[in-house]
Length: 97
Image (spheres, rainbow, N blue to C red):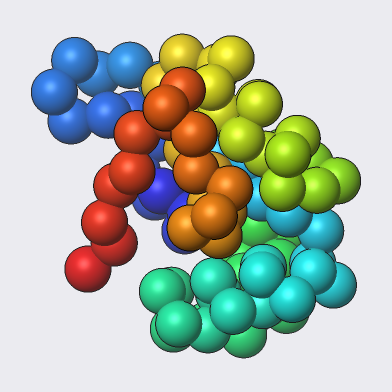
């Protein structure tokens, strides 16, 4: 989903809305490296190529972690990331393998 190759959830086919923190955020860098095995600039380049070629749209950037949690909680079918201590009962945790 963060590679923008999967644009719908598997079970019900609902569109996925992807949220990310700013590219210079330490958590964004850690997420890109540890979970996606990419450097943040590689991820941004891939999104920009998809937007430029008309084959996809870039994730929506939120300014901080509270905004991330709020937007994910308020947007059906969305996905985002946050630190463990910012999880709330309003969002569901999904493991990335």
